[in-house]
Image (cartoon, rainbow, N blue to C red; front, side, top):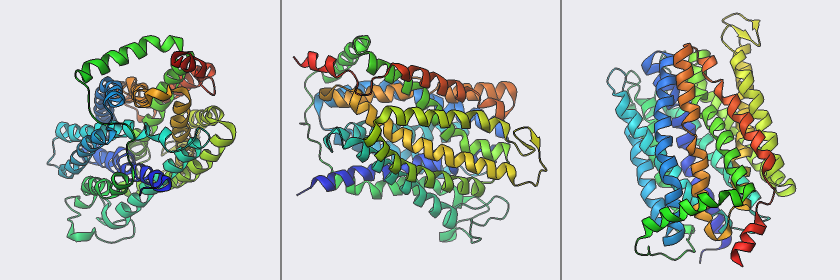
Length: 449
């Protein structure tokens, strides 16, 4: 018999299993490796922005329809299996990004496939959150799950840095050893193994999820389910003005989550280009950020339970806005306008501190955001709500990467290229003013009557 405790732990394991896509591929290992392959920080940042932006458009278009379809037909597990397959195939294929012999467009296509799989699987696992506990418990459950996911990202990053990812200069890993399994450092096989590692990690650690988590919704799609799901989404979108708190929250989260994702997506490639860090240097930066993220996601869960998610989200946005403004004033040659020698460690230390702040505030805000979504959503249409939540996260998800790509290409400066992030954070903070802490509960009660 599967107990409630096992169901919660099984649900936690999705965060543990999927986190390496964000940690290893999006930010700390594969992104700076692409910069090394292209040997041009601005060009790599632009290409990365356009590739991630294209995937975001696909996710934005399909996410709410898939969520509505799951609410109507049940069997969210079937969708999670399907998109898990896309995650595994997309990430494994990154092995073929070999120095001097890779097609950037093919690699970005597989990267986008894996990212789409991760995002769509997340829609259905997030929609299971209300089934795991009471209204008072879900903030703590969400925070603990996010902290557990960060811990998984940390362990996978340590494995990469210690045993696999080699420096392009020395061919050695962080601890000075050759990549394991006889991988060829000259061909960067240790670093390229990040793709297969991410795929295998996911496949192995999703086993507890599939064994312990059960979907309480009945299976079986009714005739014309896709057409009906699309109609349901259109009806929900038209009705959003009648639920102003939900409307404001979706709009707010649309901007601040896009900005946060921009920080994650470009953090590694930015440090590699501006501070001239290697893959190993960026990995150490990632360890600090993830430790801070895991610790503060756990602490944030208790703050959410005590104060509610809205003040927790507000404080996190303020911290992230400060970092977004500050990072453009840190380079190899200066810190906040104060010149330093090129061998100075001050820019590195400052950026490490920023990484810890991004990890801490990012861990808190992501856990609190899905807790807030549960408070804002119609309890009877939770998967559709998280489909809209994914839409809100992706409807403008192309704005951060594409605007960074455009501004970077236009200015030929990685520092100026990230300035759109501060605008997005401030828009999210402004729209949060119209969000009620407990949502439009009266509107849902009236609809039920």
